[in-house]
Image (cartoon, rainbow, N blue to C red):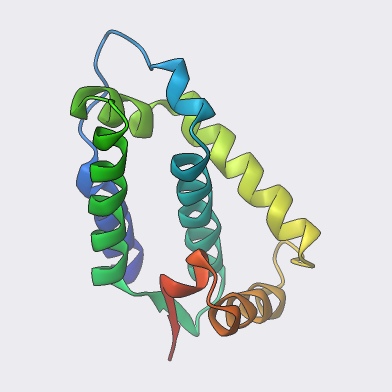
Length: 136
């Protein structure tokens, strides 16, 4: 339970409550930002469902801060970024995309071994998701 709370806190380091103005739809079209957020969503599902894989908390934190800096360099404001990462519809969209990726990669819901297998593959391949995870 503790590592779930810590992972959620690390991912949310750049997040604050969403602003009333809504999301900037241009953020949805930024490939690097969306691929990175999808990698986090996939990693989160792997570590939640595999007891032998946990997050590299400092790596997650540093990647979140680097992603925020990247978005700012692309002209987005901190408020736009924070609103985007906290938007319920966007969170649900990333969770759905993560589930699709997991299923396409052979994960079977409720089957821990399949999550662990994919997690080990992601780590071995050095994918963005894999760089944010570790085995123990």
